[in-house]
Every structure is written in structure tokens, then in C-alpha cells.
Length: 263
Image (cartoon, rainbow, N blue to C red; front, side, top):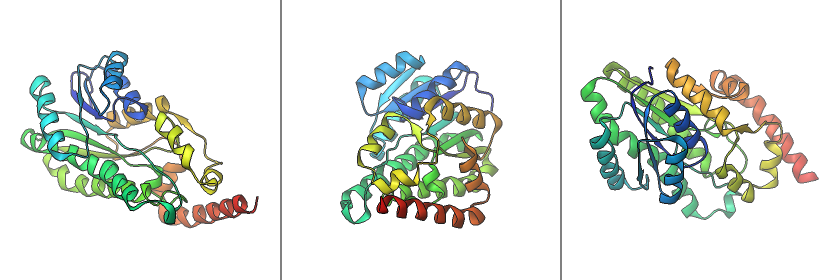
């Protein structure tokens, strides 16, 4: 995909992976619109990325998404590229998490992606072109201890992107799914505050990547037209050979959890 001059809308664009992706897209000549909830952080992100415009939108609210995206596209033209990266993880023991946590994770991580896709896909169908990028997670490829609320929502994003890929391809619309590993972002720092010790042990062998590094993989994947975008070898292997690798990964994780509990 040629990024020069396109209109890209990036959700979750005020921090973390969304912010770094928006920065790189702008550097490559895209006209970037940033979407996030916090107005002050959006203003700071706009200065950092030189985004053309911002919109304070709660992506869990479908009417707000429809109205906000309509304003963005009225000002700068139809969306050529959507990067739906708004999301967060709230880890904890399954039996200790309130039901509301499960609902909130699905509302933000899955429906927050769905609402944004629905806001741009009509115009893409009319024009016969466009690119949709949904951000899942390595936890959307394998069940991870402590992520019983988060992982199912990211599995749902993966399923949505896989389904839309086949449905929208005949209309000239490309669909990609991103599977970031543990990434050094403000959101990841908040995750660490509530992670069970078993989760910390299970992820101990995984190198935490910088947001800039993950964003560079995302932007390169967009340019190359890749359907699956990964940032490290472990996640690539899980996506490519999940049926073979998952049992091994499960055994390794179980051993790490037992070790954490015994220590």
C-alpha cells in the first residue's frame, strides 16, 4: 500500500502502539486522524505526530463513533486506512474478576474495533478500495494464564478480521490483523500492577518490545499488504503453526505456573 497522501484514522492514537503507528504513518506522508478518549493526551499526541486532526471518541459507543468518524471524513475525505488499536488488558484470577470486567474488555477490545470498522466500511465498499487493520494480541492466539477477560476479546478481534478478509476482498478491501507481543507502553505498565505472579512467570521468557519497534512492523506489514502482522518470531510461529506449537506452549506455560506457585 502506498501511504503518501492517504487518509489514515488511528484509534487508541494518544499513546502506546497507536501513537507510535500514527507517528510512522505521518512520517511516510499519510494524513493521519487520531482518535482517543482523553482530549489533553490527544492534543499532545497531535503535536508529536503532526496529525491533521483529532477526535475525542469513546469507541465503545457506536453512535459516538459514527458521528465522530463522519466529522473526520467530512474534513479530510474518506478513510483509506483504519488502524483500530484502541484497547486495554485487565489481568487477574478468573474467579476474582468482576463480571463487569469481562463485559468492559469485550466492549473496548472487540466492540470498540467492530464499531470503527462499521463506520468506514460503507465508504470503502462504495469506492472499491481501502485497508482495515485490527489489533489483536499474542493472547489472541493462545490462552494465557491471568487473561481470562482479555484474551477472549482479542480472539474475537482475530475472528472478525479473518472473516472480514474473505468477505471484503472481492470488493477491493484489504484486511489485516496484528498480533503484538508484550509491548512497553503505558497500558502494559498498568497491566503489571494487577498481574498474578503466575502470569509474570509465564511471560518471563518473552522479551518486551518497544512500542516504536512494534509500530514499525505494523507499518511495514501495511505497506507489504500482509494479512497477518507479527513483531517477533514466537508470535509468528504461533500464528503460522498454532495447532502444532500450542500444545508445547501450553506445557511450557504450565511448568512456569507450577514453578511460580512453588516458589
